[in-house]
Length: 144
Image (tube, rainbow, N blue to C red; front, side, top):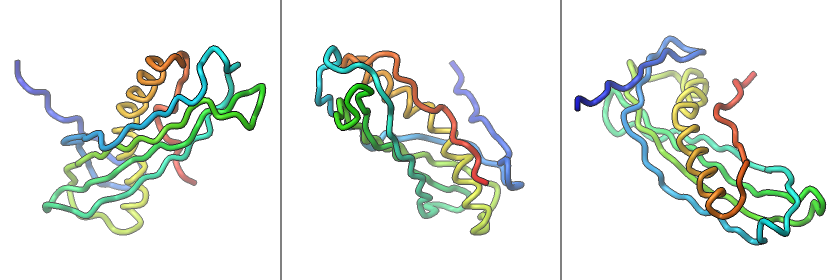
């Protein structure tokens, strides 16, 4: 079976073309603190952090995406049934070195390539821990 070519996309906010070369799950930690049957649903309080990594080779750019936070019981807002901390990195080919402004705009576009991989991994792990039907964002909103 032939390998698929990486998908290429034009950044929504810059003329750069990027293609995802590889991903690496760096960390996934989910602490189930309270049994799911004792929790009445609730909200997710999550932080998303994007970090651009230094270019290892010309024509590439790396980035890391971290999702961290916890679930909150809707019946008892001070009760935390589980905590999440996960990091994924992606290596991208890029047409040229971006300016600082382009890099900031490009970071969200690159994060949107790897976000579905990380959120699917988190959702699957939470389901295995007894917390089904939890859905995370599949793309980040564009910054104003």
